[in-house]
Image 1 (cartoon, helix red, strand yellow):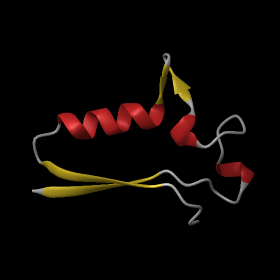
Image 2 (cartoon, helix red, strand yellow; image 1 turned 120 degrees about the vertical axis):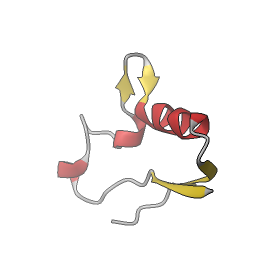
Image 3 (spheres, rainbow, N blue to C red; image 1 turned 30 degrees about the vertical axis):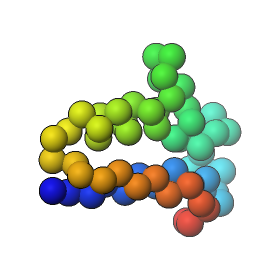
Length: 58
């Protein structure tokens, strides 16, 4: 089985933000992009654990 790590931290550089927001919390078709990623990982039979890192790390 595999473990997934999702980096949801806010970058220090505003150039890495999308419309002034963290990419994890940007809405796409009415859903937050972070939710879409996590839901896709949940549906994958190979993923055993999902870790979301919420701190500013880069």
